[in-house]
Image (cartoon, rainbow, N blue to C red; front, side, top):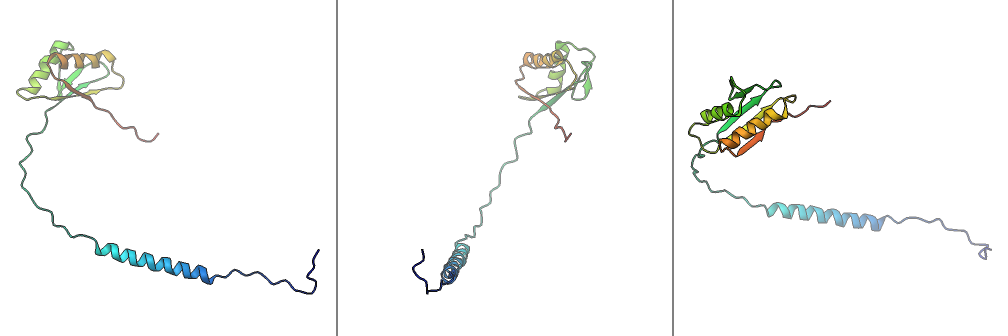
Amino acid sequence: MDFRRGRKHEELEINLVPLIDVLLVIIIFLVVSATFSRINELQINLPTAEANAPQEKPLVVTVSVNATGHYTVNNTALSEQSVEAIVAALRKAVGNGKEPTIVINADANTTHQSVVNVMEAARQADYTHITFATQVQTGQ
């Protein structure tokens, strides 16, 4: 029931003036704070120092094993596939170096035993730093 028969309904309007005022205050705040942060930047000249040359590069010995079980130590092929031959080749490749890193490059189709032989030879020669070379697969 509408008891206001003679009155016309006023159309509702959204008053945008307060919204614009608030947005202007926010914009002014952002401009002032951005300018203020630039003033606070410090110009620093870092001191210089002369450092000693690096001690020496770590000694890396690469042992490659192909799919048929043949070994190469630093690109020198071994005639025998025994652990003793690998130990001798590792010691020859290291020479007087200290704490070499043994990098094992094994073919994906090589036997597990061939890789274990290289690890055993490194253990017998007292070389504890062993790592494996891998290849990153590209998108398939």
